[in-house]
Length: 305
Image 1 (cartoon, rainbow, N blue to C red):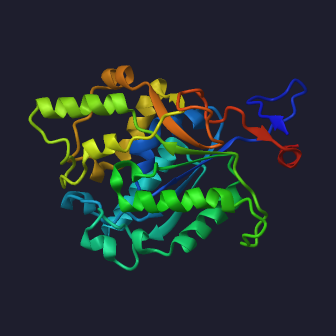
Image 2: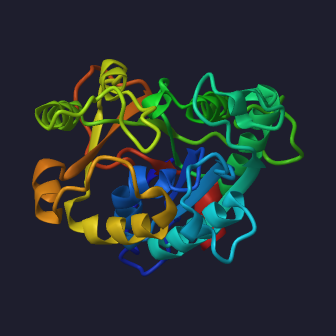
Image 3: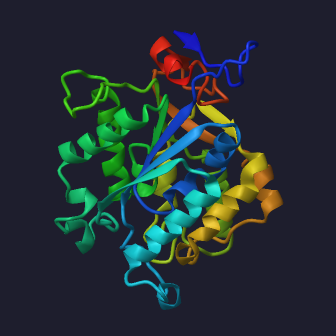
């Protein structure tokens, strides 16, 4: 095994490509959540792939945004295509499950929604993508699903199971087994979250009732934050982050107002991640690059020779 070199070697021979797979639930998750990270790694030559598990049809949309679209799902997927182009994603895998809506809602009981889907089936579809893409690094939601959304939890469970299953010869999909080297859960900056909760309270707003439908509980999000082991600097990529987020125009209303750009760069110059595999030696930050320690085997190098 060899450690990755991010440039050509001294003889000018091409090195293996770094590949990142993000496994998320809805159109807009990739931009609102990881736009800065994606923009940075694409700029550094990493191939970034995205799984979007649902069509996002339960997102609240104002009528004016539906002009020219036959459904909310069609609109949301078009917004995803816009963001994917802005961010430079290599490919988006749209699994096509129905959006479940929030936990306990009637929509979360729909037989076609992701929350009600057979977990083994979802896992298999994620395994198939992993074996096709062969990413060294995989990112999905934390165990609480970010803010407790059932679709986030469902795709997190499927991706975590698929991470191990993809490398097993006994798990047959008709593809060559392949296990990625690192698995991360997207982290949440607890300090920034506490700051946001404080500001909301000072402004007379309830942090347990955030969003257009007042169904996001920031205090519960804070209570379920997991340790951060990796911090990736994204300060220089906020402009690209915003450009991708603006593609999801139908979903921008109703949340907390966006802070000025200079203030966001000052308060949150990094994005944090929980390292699930390999298990970290301690609950502290010890990485500043998700590809740290990633290696390429001879078979991988043969593909680019």
